[in-house]
Image 1: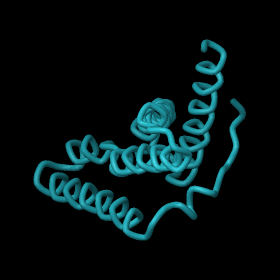
Image 2: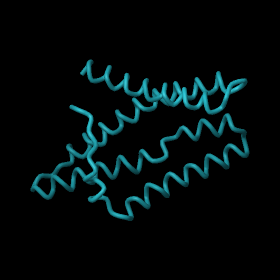
Image 3: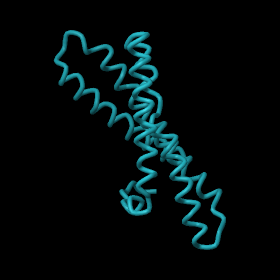
Length: 140
């Protein structure tokens, strides 16, 4: 399956679905800030890694795919769950890259230029995430 960008989902998404995504993400971020304030940035960072938007996105993907199939007279439950699971796989691959990003920042932030470390870590995140996608594509 080639990687492509499909913006048609933006038309199908209703304003209240965007509100759910942003509210959920905002609540998780605010809770993380409170945890970090009470227990310190190390503990707060663990909670910041929580997928703030993924749960809302996965449910919306499942709903949209199921609705598309219903319009064609098919139940579409399996299709909706399959689409959400593909999104979960992509999130997992991106998380591997994010782990690499965090390790690089942790080890190089002290004594080095902040912007250089963040830029290099971001490039490594991208490279590892794309490489993970290629490896998965080859294995399946």
